[in-house]
Length: 285
Image (tube, rainbow, N blue to C red; front, top):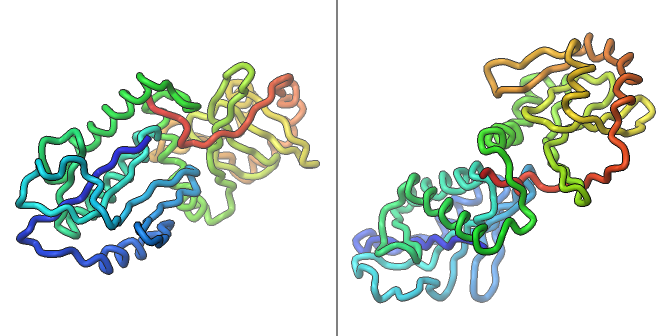
């Protein structure tokens, strides 16, 4: 399900220049434009969260009962299709960009739940998203999405967005990998996982539940958070002034920690078959 947010323009502002709209998206990474006879799709492909959403320019208006709306505004056949079953963190990113689009091109917005066209307001539009998400979940269930603590998920999402910056901050001398949610479909146990290559300096993300370990022969096994930190805690330092619950394994300590491998193997998870899911499949609620 998606929320359709339609864009309108005051008659006094004149016609919109679609070439400038497309040029606007050309300047933003990860957007791709697709043309058909009836629609121009402006698609955002998010590799870090493995999801997509789109803006559309259409030949025909997609607004229901448009005749009831103020004649002072014109529907410019431009709209946002915003998915509802995504983390609030991503919704805020999408709406922040939408706010910028409205300001840049002097646009107002309309949704079927509105009485009329109105200026974009971040608080109101985010409330619209939350209400639609909750209503959809109440009627149809989670649809292969998984509930997660709101504060923790927000911090995990922030980490996911800053992986490249962290790599640069540590001069690419410390391993910083993306978070990877996993689930055992048999037991329905799920959580955040990260990977550690034995002996390699590493940043450990916030709120991890599992650590996937590769030893020096690239043999893989997994341990739970409490077991990993119980063994490895003495080698790690807290990362302060960024996000809570982040830890750093420095180069010297990374070399020393190799001797902990046998202790870690004793805590290896057995008889469970975890599968990777997308971070965007976790819902804060």
